[in-house]
Structure formats: C-alpha cells, structure tokens
Length: 153
Length: 174
Image (cartoon, rainbow over the protein chains, first blue to last red):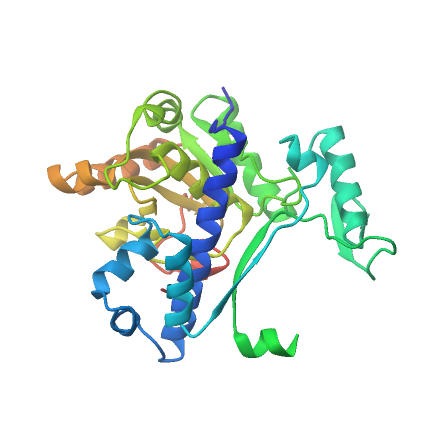
C-alpha cells in the first residue's frame, strides 16, 4: 500500500475546513498583534470579561466558538469579520479531486468564471475579470479584516 | 499532484520507500482549486492507526469536530500550504537534538520528523490526554528516532534542530 487517505464525508469536511479557516484567521491576527507588541491574549480576555485561558482554549480549538463569539473576538482585536458565500465550482460540489479529468475541466471552468485563465500544467494566472460574470466561483472564504483597509476598498 | 521540482525530487527517494511498504504517502483530499504544497508520508503503524483506530476516537473537549475530522483538516491544511501557527499547529519536542516534531489537533498529537522542508514523515500518533496522563512523550520521541534510523535514506535523514523556518514554509508565531 504505497498511499493512504483520510476519509471524511464531504459535508463534515466542509465544516472542518471552515472551522479551521476561522481559527487560523484568529491565530494569525493574534500573531500579528504579538509581533507589533499590540493586543495580547490577556488583553483580549480583559476586553471580553473572561480569563486569558478562555482565549487560549478558543485559539487552540479545544473550545468551540459560536458565531457571536467570532464577532466578539474580532471586536476585541479591533477587527471586523467579513463573511462571503461564493459559488462552488462543479468539481468542488461533486467532491472531485482536481487531478481527475472532470475535476480539471471544472477547475478550468471555475478559473475562467473567476476571471483567470490556465496555462501550462495546472497553472492559474489572474487576468482581468471575465465579462458577463457577477459572482466569483471560488470556495467560501472567511477573513478577519482591518476596518481601515476594508473602508479603503 | 502538481508539486515543485524540488519536492518531486525529494519524493523520489521517499516514494521508493513507499513502494517497498516502509512508508505510505498521504493523498490529501484538497479542494479542486488548491494544489498541494507540502507532503506527508506515514509509517505503516501511522497509516493503520488512521484507518482503524482514529475513526473510533471521541473528542474529550465536547467540541464539534471529531478527532478524525481534526486530523483530516490538520493534514489537509499542512498539505495545502496553509499558514501554520507555531505552537498551535506544530512544535518541536524535547530533547531538541532528536529533531522530532509534532503536528497538533485539539485531541491528537502526530509525532514524526521533517525529511526536508515541507515534507513530514508521520511515525506514530495518539490522544493528547493519554500522552500527558501516562507520560508517553519520551517514548514516542524514541520511537520516531528508532524508526528514522532504520529507514533506508541517505543522510541527512531529517532536518535537524528546532527552527520552524527550516521545516515549514508559511507559518506564524501566535
């Protein structure tokens, strides 16, 4: 057996990916604050009226975060959470690996829909947005945005 | 899998070991728009644990994700090249000179080493609480070292030391 996989149902994999994406966004935000000597976990806890250990547990994933908690945590970090629902590519919806012919075709379709083109073996390069398309065909994303940057956008 | 030439070259040696059943390459189930940027190989023991024991484990933290889902997304994040959080996602183990690292989920610890940057060889895994309660860290570190020593790899068999930049690309300090 030269290879192995970890089998999880598509819907549970989607849930796990989203939870991980949110958590990693906060871990990164905390890391950036730490790097510039800004808000640390103790201060976050103070702002949310909880002990620092609660923040640590949430960042480590041993305590779940509700949607409201996500908002509170972002607020404590002086950030605004941005939540975007994007259309799934056909391959993503069918849970096809990109390496299969159908997955590759769907990848090209998704890339063209998003205003990108492919060249070479699997390379994707951004170009001007494709005309006639109003929604990007990317996987749903979550990011914790700096409100100043968001306003500027 | 579309990988850099460097990673493909490194994989050639590890894939030979995989063909001989010493190692097993993880095939991550990444989204169609994501290409793998890191690689995970597993020992036979690790692959068997993933297949037979991991699905039966339950989280002790009453969180939404089961240990199976935690490990799946942990290894998926690793293979996708996502930014890893030093300390939260991965960390070196003591004694430092053994160059043994762990990938971490809320419930699980995966012990192994980096054969090259962004190439992790998972040797053994277990529940974090069991490891801490029984005191299994030293034993698992020793197991990783022994496994690595018997692998038919040219030296250096691993990236030595505890510098996170040396073992993974794209990480942050929490």
